[in-house]
Image (cartoon, rainbow, N blue to C red; front, top):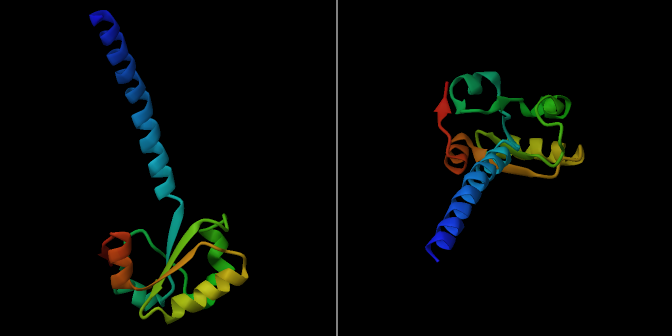
Length: 120
């Protein structure tokens, strides 16, 4: 009986050793399946932006989105100063076939929602 329990326990430990890294890798790959875009001006960007974001001013988003998001189902977070320009950018991207968009409105809200700091 004791030998059987040891065998079961060893099997469970080995299964966990295999499963934990696999689950962790899957979680990390899901986290990387998004892009954060600041649609403000270069001057606004220089005053502070979300860590990890890319700058594409809203009036250029249609022409430059393919540089950062080739998969049209990839999650795209947009933000600006008030949410107005991010909304315009989202409309442009919808018309281009992108479907997984979120307007986070302001830098402050984007920082809270994404749990990322603001950098200069």
